[in-house]
Image (cartoon, rainbow, N blue to C red; front, side):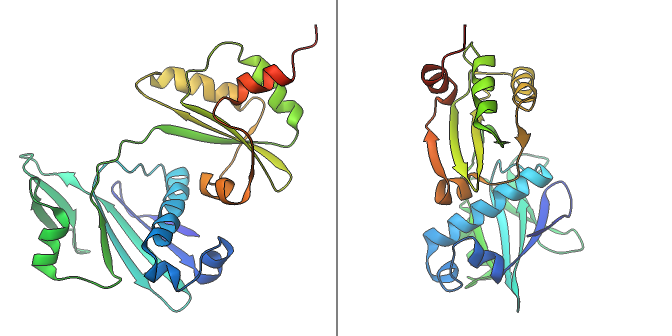
Length: 230
């Protein structure tokens, strides 16, 4: 997948039909099966977020262009106008914007102004607050054991799930900002990468094709099954 960062609030990416099929999606179902198309979209957004630090934290303007060899997708995050009464979405390359009252449904407003589009524009209306997450890769399970004993104390993470995929172990960790501040999260992450490597694989791939070894409380379960040598 090719990713281009346009500006702070907009990113454009291209995914070929071959890549789509390699991810386990059919060409027809991405147009006619909403659930599957949303799975593909959020899988791609995970990669965009990982590579470009593009966090989804509000309504999105999504333009999908069907090309001969794949899909070109432009995603723009809305921002509140200066007076705080409207959401602003860029709509033209010249930088002009579309103002939408914050108390009016975005989708209804756009349909009234522009009409519906079959496959060109969709909107995600829900305001999403994302937790910070990482995926670390390990070539040897012994590294996972050593890491688990390194964290004798509770990490404060929301989730620690271990997967096995393509001959490697992958640890998915998710942190809540309500539990840990930014400095604490960075400290834990840096300690994890002393034992494993940062990975660009997505959680969707691991859930779909990987084998789940430990669910949610990996460190605690590994310490229980593999106690430290005295």
